[in-house]
Length: 377
Image (cartoon, rainbow, N blue to C red; front, side):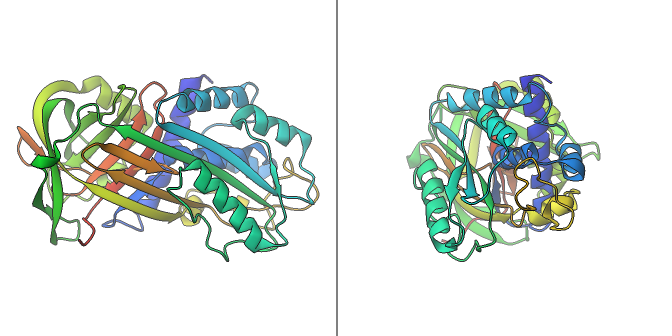
């Protein structure tokens, strides 16, 4: 499996998790990191055996335990980490009394360039402080309190972490003097005022149709340097829920968009927004068929350690994303945005839209989200 193929599989898995998350948040805002989610579960997969490994490889579509795969993972992470304004880190916090399998430690180093930190989970409050400091450090302070003080217990044995921080300036910034208050038509049928940014420029733009006949458009807003960009995706009709589009998302679909979009002159109007999401991934992962790893009776992580039976108790993600006239700041995961248009010449995102921040060379979707309503001002 080549580097591109591995990244496509990880992207597809992350996009599926996003779709499952949105089923419980159909008309809410949500920010998410497909890349971060795939990374943390890939770290768990490296230590899985038996039925648990089989379930993880089936649902995720790839196995990092295959020969050559840890190296592919490392090259992918190096590719992304070399981008200006983008920082990625993986962390493993392990109970100090547990002996980790040599093979697992070696694979973690090879695939994620990380070595386990020993933590005393018999003092859970102190362990939370240590982990929160690690997350804060690797997200430039954007996520200072990842775990609540009572999140961990003295039964905690292992915490797998991925931190992602992105700060990008738009290639062509929006003129803040043109930002004005406009009404946004929310997913729940109400209208709320929002600060709408405006930019007239040549954009990559395309119009598409889902298999069920829903028309939507995609517009690309590039960041400085051109290797990262934000894709804004929105249905033409205001009453179409974003879930219709997120159900259809895949790495191949994004490649199709990129192949079909054309440079056109448009005036883009989109909201200035900040999203803070705290996402419990457990329900989505259970619904996708990953029950085994959460069960103390059946979970098999014997490659991590044979000292004790390990199972996953929590899968959490926090994402903060801030989009303004100058650019975007994102921390800790991946984001999706929903998008809509009025007329052909002016593309006005005054209705729900999806957003995806993608690294073009690898295809990695770092952040994504759906914007269904402005926050009350």
